[in-house]
Image 1 (cartoon, rainbow, N blue to C red):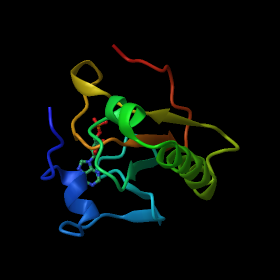
Image 2 (image 1 turned 90 degrees about the vertical axis):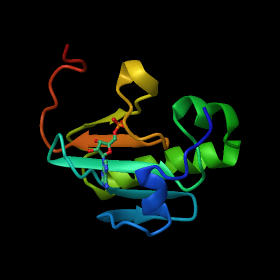
Image 3 (image 1 turned 180 degrees about the vertical axis):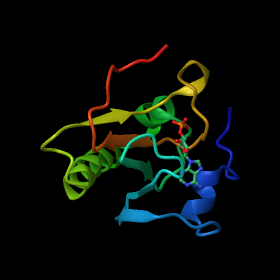
Length: 119
Ligand code: AMP
């Protein structure tokens, strides 16, 4: 499946639709999730075009991967969730319920998050 440059996060990256930005550097953009599942719910996306974690972990450079995850930690500290704790989620493909086909990590926190999986 090729990367679809019309996905919503690609449009956000191109500035075609707005986002509630919390962080940006040359590698990543982070913004608040439009339907938050917790008091803190931020999405971190690479600026390069990767469909999901599988694509990112296969094709991104070591520099991109390092910069991405370094930024995720920095953003979590900026959000002040590192003391109480937070959860990272990256949904890959159908079984995980991935809705937007541009790789992203959810940062969730701000309250006790309960069990990891709800079935
Ligand atoms: P996933 O299921 O992992 O693909 O998550 C996609 C997330 O993107 C969902 O939590 C949506 O609420 C969120 N989302 C969709 N459109 C937007 C948008 N325009 N701005 C911010 N978050 C969005």
